[in-house]
Length: 240
Image (cartoon, rainbow, N blue to C red):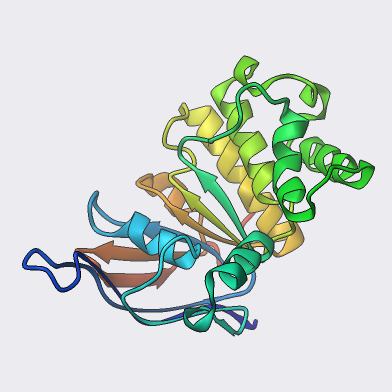
């Protein structure tokens, strides 16, 4: 498999040059190949969200290089970063960040609308296709505010996939869900990974869910301390 994500010596500091300068990430080296399904684990405050923001091109590293699908992102300007992020990366957050007054379909259409500037029938067809795949097409015209937490997070997964991204970053995507809903959302992401080859990097504290990933990376105090593959899965797991 081709290398999709390469981190080379990524460091991140805040208040650079001041007496209170603090380094959060201390030289992260990481390679992920296309099609991997990876859990990122570590205690609160260890730098997981900071790392995810850098990989998602929402923040820049203080030093080091980040490659996505062969593109050296550290040399790109803000406009180029925005284009690459919009077309190559999908996001699923712990708090789904849907527009509550919008329908399920309207929320899924949003990334395509931002990219193309005006709605069209193809966007709605794409949204309906994704909502069907997350078993919500019957609720496509229901406002997000009137749906359960599990349903809202499934909409968030569909929205993350709207632009056919190469990589989906999920930050505690099941953290606010009950056990059954959490497993359903996790299994949904796994199914997209297996059927479409979409690469996933999932931040989670849930060891049961991490055990269903092909690979588990551990981050402690801004340093990678573990990187192991799950011998029980070997890349052929089925959604739970």
